[in-house]
Amino acid sequence: MDWIKTTYYVLDTLLCTKTEELVKSTNIMINNIKSIDYTPILTKIFMVYVDTQVKTTKIYNYLYNNYDFVKTTIDNVSYTIEYVKTKYNKVRIEPFEKQWVCISMLLDNNKDMFFGNKDIYLENYQYIKPHKTPDVSETDYYNECLSYFSKTALSVANCDSNVIEIMITMKVNNNLFNKSFRKNTTINENEKLYNNKISKALFLSIEYTHPQMKNKISIELPKNMYFINNNILSSLFIKRYLEYQYEPYIFDDKYVIDLMDNDVNMFSINYTEYIILSENTYQVIKNE
Image (cartoon, rainbow, N blue to C red):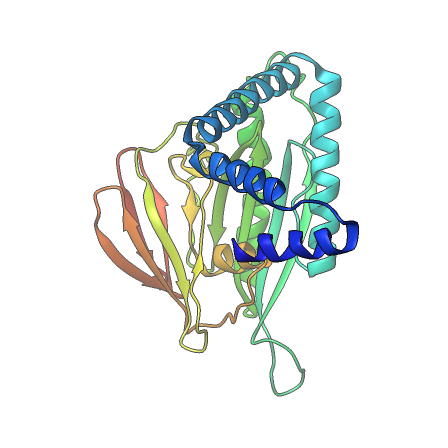
């Protein structure tokens, strides 16, 4: 503590005071501070912080789940912030509405005539009216909604050679249903396309890789998409997913998707393959 003595000696010279007592008392104070065990204090501060966080979360959840005004306000503000963020980063965002159908299309581009990507991505949203017809069940109503666009998609896929794939994505009560259509796709007229039964299949890891990309892109499938008969991870499915996330990417027929399922089976699929979910498992389908 020589610097303390030096400092007080300077003060003693300037102020004509005795420094010995000041130096002694200061050293005692510093030693007392050093001897304090701060662990109980820091632990108490941490516990107070955790307790405050838990209480705040409980209050937030209570207000959000029990007051429509609070829920609506929070949801609108959150969506607005995310909307601004996506516009700034030039990525897409799904509508705020809870019930819609997205019709997306992947077309083959003529590179001899036009600049741009090898494939052209197009999409359009339509909004589903609430189910109000008493003589038609809710399940049948949504099946009609999905069938309407599915039949149109199949018709378009079969009539134009530039169409690679058309996909119908429908959101109902926060659940997502997905159907993909190519030239070789067939529809059973008696089959209900809308199936709201959850599949037991699950993927623990899904990664998008491309030989020209240094980094992989992790694909996070929402749990509300694991329904029986859903078509996932087709080329158009992948393209649409990439359009809605923030990482830079390269998309063409050279990409590979690495997967690990809930039984820790690891495998890969490519541009020509996709997956259909069934009740207990899944099936990899190769486009002909």
